[in-house]
Amino acid sequence: MLLNQAYHLSYCTNIHPGETWQEIFDNLVRYLPGIKKTLSPEKPFGIGLRLSDVASQELLEQNKLQQFRKWLDDIGLYVFTLNGFPYGGFHRQVVKDAVHQPDWTTTERAAYTIRLATILAALLPESMAGGISTSPLSYKPWYTGKPDQLEQVFYTSTAHLVQVIQALQSIKEATGKTIHIDLEPEPDGLLENTGEVIRYFQDRLLPQGIKTLMASSNLEETEAREVILEHLQLCYDVCHFALAYEEPVTAFARLKAAGIKIGKIQLSAALKVQLPPGTAARKAVAETLAPFAESTYLHQVVERSINGQLIHYTDLPLALQHIQKPEAREWRTHFHVPLFTASYNKLLSTQDDIVKVLALLQQDQITQHLEVETYTWEVLPEGLKKDVSESIQRELDWVIHTLNQTHHAENGRIERSRAHAVTDR
Image (tube, rainbow, N blue to C red):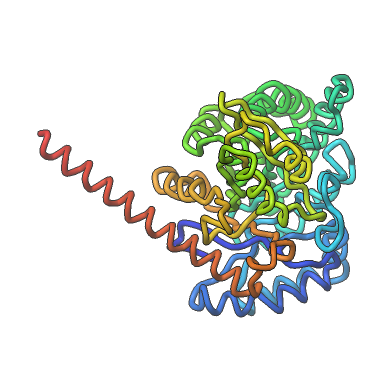
């Protein structure tokens, strides 16, 4: 959705099950026209498109891509961002840590991402940049206690990312369209917080990437740095950064100071619970959380203790075994719960972090790309499940309402500041 030319707002179609192009297209036909009619009847409506590896190959066969572009134009839809994180199956099967496979150490991940960039370049409207979110290199627990392997993972992953950056630069030269890959930090990812992202860029990506580009593309050092920072950015998933207990204002400032751009913000909320004292009260919390411990996705838990220390559990069932720890004070769980409510049967969410992010965008519009990523409708406890179309619309309505509120609040702040300045004179 185009909001006053300021934002491109949509939802990620990974909400819909389907791995082949036909399955994906059938879902788009089923849901998108009605959602557009309700939310954006007079203006084009954007799509945050998720394509599996299989679908990306099928879409490039024969003239399917041209047919898809015509369908988009006829309906009044456009694609501005792709989700290139899940490579293979993502619904109705066990995903867990396999969501990171193949990781960035593989040529398969690089080839898939270049294929997505080729598709996005063909679909992207003129004079609009596009982004593709992707895995945070790999999955950290795979390399616990293996420092030599981990070093090789960083080196090989970076080499493949630089290959993709070179492909994106070629696409820009051929089409005039800028496409960026957006690394998506998440719990237990090889990159999972602001500090790790900055260290990766400064200590690994830029030194290795600049050296490669200067040798292969005859670029000066400054030019090579600019190419890398233009084509490799960050996907700021609000749920994931809330799980790291990071304040958005601090994270944004640190990334900006490091020269790292945010290509896309995924609007998502995590489960949150303040752990009460007492064995019986903790047991009641565990019983409330138990329905969220489902078998499809990883639901990492990050615990904050009384001294502020963060303890990581790789999945909710493991965390529940430790809920009676007296020093534990708060749990945040990687479960993308609906945005439009801040509480769930005595549990809370990190909805307030989304409000903070949208308010910060009123002061510094670091990106135009906003994508709701609530993909867990099928695995929510029964009391939270709703009709999919109704749920999508409710999510987007909440975001639009919150954007309008933060916009008015910021305008009011500016007017008050001006009034004070005049008075001070």
